[in-house]
Length: 246
Image (cartoon, rainbow, N blue to C red; front, side, top):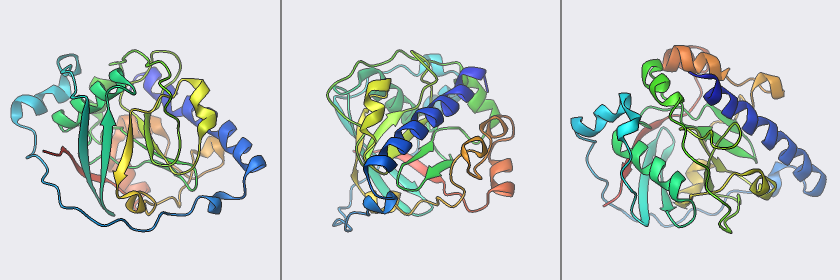
Protein backbone atom coordinates (compact mmCIF):
# COMPACT_ATOMS: atom_id res chain seq x y z
CA UNK A 1 0.00 0.00 0.00
CA UNK A 2 1.37 3.41 -0.84
CA UNK A 3 2.20 5.89 1.88
CA UNK A 4 -0.78 8.16 1.14
CA UNK A 5 -3.33 5.45 1.89
CA UNK A 6 -1.61 4.45 5.12
CA UNK A 7 -1.54 8.11 6.07
CA UNK A 8 -5.27 8.26 5.45
CA UNK A 9 -5.84 5.97 8.40
CA UNK A 10 -3.34 7.87 10.54
CA UNK A 11 -4.69 11.31 9.63
CA UNK A 12 -8.25 10.24 10.32
CA UNK A 13 -7.08 8.69 13.58
CA UNK A 14 -5.54 11.99 14.66
CA UNK A 15 -8.57 14.01 13.60
CA UNK A 16 -10.95 11.63 15.30
CA UNK A 17 -8.84 11.46 18.45
CA UNK A 18 -9.11 15.23 18.73
CA UNK A 19 -12.82 15.05 17.97
CA UNK A 20 -13.33 12.32 20.58
CA UNK A 21 -11.45 14.31 23.22
CA UNK A 22 -13.70 17.28 22.53
CA UNK A 23 -16.79 15.09 22.72
CA UNK A 24 -15.67 13.64 26.04
CA UNK A 25 -15.37 17.16 27.42
CA UNK A 26 -18.82 18.17 26.20
CA UNK A 27 -20.75 14.91 26.36
CA UNK A 28 -21.01 11.91 28.67
CA UNK A 29 -19.19 8.67 27.85
CA UNK A 30 -19.96 6.87 24.54
CA UNK A 31 -23.07 5.45 26.17
CA UNK A 32 -24.57 8.87 25.34
CA UNK A 33 -25.04 7.51 21.83
CA UNK A 34 -27.30 4.46 22.34
CA UNK A 35 -28.41 2.25 19.50
CA UNK A 36 -31.66 3.21 17.84
CA UNK A 37 -34.58 0.80 18.22
CA UNK A 38 -34.63 -1.85 15.48
CA UNK A 39 -36.37 -0.63 12.36
CA UNK A 40 -38.90 -2.66 10.43
CA UNK A 41 -37.04 -4.64 7.80
CA UNK A 42 -38.08 -4.07 4.22
CA UNK A 43 -36.95 -6.65 1.70
CA UNK A 44 -35.18 -5.08 -1.25
CA UNK A 45 -33.70 -7.06 -4.11
CA UNK A 46 -29.95 -6.62 -4.54
CA UNK A 47 -28.28 -6.83 -7.89
CA UNK A 48 -26.29 -9.90 -8.85
CA UNK A 49 -22.51 -10.09 -8.31
CA UNK A 50 -20.56 -7.83 -10.66
CA UNK A 51 -19.82 -9.39 -14.05
CA UNK A 52 -16.26 -10.23 -14.99
CA UNK A 53 -16.01 -7.06 -17.07
CA UNK A 54 -16.60 -4.96 -13.96
CA UNK A 55 -14.69 -7.08 -11.46
CA UNK A 56 -11.74 -6.63 -13.80
CA UNK A 57 -11.70 -3.02 -12.64
CA UNK A 58 -10.29 -4.30 -9.36
CA UNK A 59 -6.83 -4.04 -10.88
CA UNK A 60 -7.52 -1.00 -13.08
CA UNK A 61 -9.25 1.64 -10.94
CA UNK A 62 -8.49 4.29 -13.56
CA UNK A 63 -11.26 2.69 -15.64
CA UNK A 64 -13.79 2.63 -12.80
CA UNK A 65 -15.07 6.14 -13.43
CA UNK A 66 -18.78 5.84 -14.26
CA UNK A 67 -20.93 8.68 -13.00
CA UNK A 68 -23.17 7.59 -10.15
CA UNK A 69 -26.96 8.09 -10.09
CA UNK A 70 -28.12 11.12 -8.15
CA UNK A 71 -29.37 8.82 -5.37
CA UNK A 72 -28.64 5.12 -5.02
CA UNK A 73 -28.82 2.38 -2.40
CA UNK A 74 -26.18 -0.21 -1.50
CA UNK A 75 -26.98 -3.23 0.62
CA UNK A 76 -24.15 -4.48 2.81
CA UNK A 77 -24.37 -8.12 3.86
CA UNK A 78 -22.03 -8.57 6.82
CA UNK A 79 -21.07 -11.11 9.43
CA UNK A 80 -23.53 -9.38 11.78
CA UNK A 81 -26.43 -8.87 9.39
CA UNK A 82 -27.51 -6.46 6.67
CA UNK A 83 -27.60 -2.70 6.48
CA UNK A 84 -28.31 -0.31 3.60
CA UNK A 85 -26.48 2.90 2.70
CA UNK A 86 -28.24 5.63 0.75
CA UNK A 87 -25.76 7.74 -1.24
CA UNK A 88 -26.49 11.23 -2.53
CA UNK A 89 -24.37 12.59 -5.35
CA UNK A 90 -25.46 16.15 -4.52
CA UNK A 91 -23.82 15.87 -1.10
CA UNK A 92 -20.38 14.85 -2.39
CA UNK A 93 -20.26 13.98 -6.13
CA UNK A 94 -16.67 12.77 -6.18
CA UNK A 95 -17.14 10.61 -3.12
CA UNK A 96 -20.45 9.20 -4.37
CA UNK A 97 -18.88 8.35 -7.76
CA UNK A 98 -15.96 6.52 -6.15
CA UNK A 99 -18.25 4.59 -3.79
CA UNK A 100 -20.52 3.64 -6.70
CA UNK A 101 -17.64 2.31 -8.78
CA UNK A 102 -16.08 0.45 -5.85
CA UNK A 103 -19.38 -1.36 -5.31
CA UNK A 104 -19.82 -2.09 -9.03
CA UNK A 105 -16.34 -3.59 -9.17
CA UNK A 106 -16.90 -5.76 -6.08
CA UNK A 107 -14.05 -4.03 -4.26
CA UNK A 108 -15.75 -4.07 -0.85
CA UNK A 109 -16.52 -7.80 -0.85
CA UNK A 110 -14.72 -9.59 2.01
CA UNK A 111 -13.37 -6.33 3.43
CA UNK A 112 -12.90 -6.10 7.19
CA UNK A 113 -14.25 -3.46 9.53
CA UNK A 114 -10.67 -3.10 10.66
CA UNK A 115 -10.97 -0.09 12.97
CA UNK A 116 -13.99 0.24 15.23
CA UNK A 117 -14.08 2.64 18.17
CA UNK A 118 -17.15 2.35 20.38
CA UNK A 119 -19.32 5.46 20.36
CA UNK A 120 -17.14 7.04 17.67
CA UNK A 121 -16.84 5.40 14.23
CA UNK A 122 -16.12 2.21 12.30
CA UNK A 123 -13.65 2.26 9.40
CA UNK A 124 -13.35 -0.08 6.40
CA UNK A 125 -12.26 -0.11 2.75
CA UNK A 126 -8.86 -1.83 2.75
CA UNK A 127 -9.21 -4.78 0.39
CA UNK A 128 -8.31 -8.19 1.77
CA UNK A 129 -6.04 -8.98 -1.20
CA UNK A 130 -2.76 -7.04 -1.08
CA UNK A 131 -2.51 -6.83 -4.87
CA UNK A 132 -5.99 -5.28 -5.13
CA UNK A 133 -5.37 -2.95 -2.22
CA UNK A 134 -2.12 -1.87 -3.83
CA UNK A 135 -3.76 -1.17 -7.18
CA UNK A 136 -6.13 1.32 -5.56
CA UNK A 137 -3.77 2.84 -2.99
CA UNK A 138 -2.61 5.54 -5.40
CA UNK A 139 -6.02 6.12 -7.02
CA UNK A 140 -6.65 9.41 -5.22
CA UNK A 141 -9.63 11.56 -6.17
CA UNK A 142 -10.44 15.24 -5.55
CA UNK A 143 -12.03 16.53 -2.38
CA UNK A 144 -15.67 17.55 -2.24
CA UNK A 145 -16.50 20.97 -0.79
CA UNK A 146 -18.78 21.26 2.26
CA UNK A 147 -22.40 20.66 1.30
CA UNK A 148 -24.21 21.31 4.53
CA UNK A 149 -24.12 17.63 5.51
CA UNK A 150 -22.54 16.75 8.83
CA UNK A 151 -20.74 13.77 10.37
CA UNK A 152 -23.62 12.85 12.60
CA UNK A 153 -24.66 9.37 13.65
CA UNK A 154 -25.05 7.05 10.67
CA UNK A 155 -23.37 9.32 8.11
CA UNK A 156 -20.85 7.70 5.74
CA UNK A 157 -17.65 9.52 4.77
CA UNK A 158 -14.29 8.88 3.10
CA UNK A 159 -11.09 8.96 5.14
CA UNK A 160 -8.16 11.03 3.92
CA UNK A 161 -4.55 11.98 4.68
CA UNK A 162 -4.88 15.61 3.64
CA UNK A 163 -6.26 17.57 0.69
CA UNK A 164 -7.14 15.43 -2.35
CA UNK A 165 -5.82 12.15 -0.90
CA UNK A 166 -9.01 10.08 -0.65
CA UNK A 167 -8.84 6.58 -2.12
CA UNK A 168 -10.98 3.71 -0.76
CA UNK A 169 -11.16 3.97 3.03
CA UNK A 170 -14.50 4.96 4.52
CA UNK A 171 -16.09 5.28 7.93
CA UNK A 172 -19.55 5.25 9.45
CA UNK A 173 -20.14 7.57 12.37
CA UNK A 174 -21.38 5.86 15.52
CA UNK A 175 -21.91 9.17 17.28
CA UNK A 176 -22.14 12.90 16.62
CA UNK A 177 -18.74 13.78 15.14
CA UNK A 178 -19.54 17.21 13.79
CA UNK A 179 -16.05 18.41 14.74
CA UNK A 180 -14.83 16.54 11.65
CA UNK A 181 -16.89 18.73 9.33
CA UNK A 182 -14.39 21.57 9.22
CA UNK A 183 -11.49 19.20 8.50
CA UNK A 184 -12.65 18.31 5.00
CA UNK A 185 -14.56 15.12 5.84
CA UNK A 186 -17.66 15.60 3.66
CA UNK A 187 -20.28 12.84 4.01
CA UNK A 188 -21.71 11.33 0.82
CA UNK A 189 -24.29 9.01 2.32
CA UNK A 190 -26.13 7.73 5.34
CA UNK A 191 -27.18 4.40 6.79
CA UNK A 192 -30.78 4.31 5.63
CA UNK A 193 -31.66 1.01 7.26
CA UNK A 194 -29.91 -1.28 9.72
CA UNK A 195 -27.95 1.10 11.94
CA UNK A 196 -28.70 -1.33 14.75
CA UNK A 197 -26.57 -3.85 12.82
CA UNK A 198 -23.73 -1.35 12.46
CA UNK A 199 -23.90 -0.82 16.23
CA UNK A 200 -23.14 -4.52 16.80
CA UNK A 201 -19.91 -4.60 14.74
CA UNK A 202 -17.05 -5.77 16.93
CA UNK A 203 -15.31 -2.89 18.75
CA UNK A 204 -13.25 -4.92 21.23
CA UNK A 205 -9.88 -4.19 19.61
CA UNK A 206 -10.52 -0.47 19.55
CA UNK A 207 -8.24 2.01 17.86
CA UNK A 208 -4.75 1.65 16.44
CA UNK A 209 -2.02 0.87 19.00
CA UNK A 210 -0.57 4.35 18.51
CA UNK A 211 -3.86 5.73 19.85
CA UNK A 212 -4.13 3.38 22.80
CA UNK A 213 -6.05 0.56 21.16
CA UNK A 214 -5.27 -3.02 20.21
CA UNK A 215 -6.37 -2.76 16.58
CA UNK A 216 -4.38 -3.91 13.55
CA UNK A 217 -1.55 -1.97 11.97
CA UNK A 218 -2.82 -0.71 8.57
CA UNK A 219 0.56 -1.26 6.93
CA UNK A 220 0.28 -4.98 7.72
CA UNK A 221 -3.24 -5.10 6.34
CA UNK A 222 -1.84 -3.59 3.14
CA UNK A 223 0.97 -6.11 2.76
CA UNK A 224 -0.60 -9.25 4.27
CA UNK A 225 -4.33 -8.75 3.74
CA UNK A 226 -7.06 -10.82 5.32
CA UNK A 227 -4.68 -13.64 6.17
CA UNK A 228 -3.06 -11.38 8.75
CA UNK A 229 -6.40 -10.10 10.04
CA UNK A 230 -8.03 -13.50 10.41
CA UNK A 231 -5.07 -15.02 12.22
CA UNK A 232 -4.28 -12.08 14.51
CA UNK A 233 -7.69 -10.43 14.90
CA UNK A 234 -10.20 -13.28 14.64
CA UNK A 235 -13.14 -11.37 16.12
CA UNK A 236 -13.27 -8.64 13.48
CA UNK A 237 -16.44 -8.41 11.42
CA UNK A 238 -16.46 -8.40 7.61
CA UNK A 239 -18.48 -7.23 4.66
CA UNK A 240 -19.56 -10.39 2.84
CA UNK A 241 -20.94 -8.48 -0.14
CA UNK A 242 -21.89 -4.90 -1.02
CA UNK A 243 -24.41 -4.67 -3.88
CA UNK A 244 -26.41 -1.98 -5.60
CA UNK A 245 -30.11 -2.25 -4.83
CA UNK A 246 -32.40 -2.27 -7.85
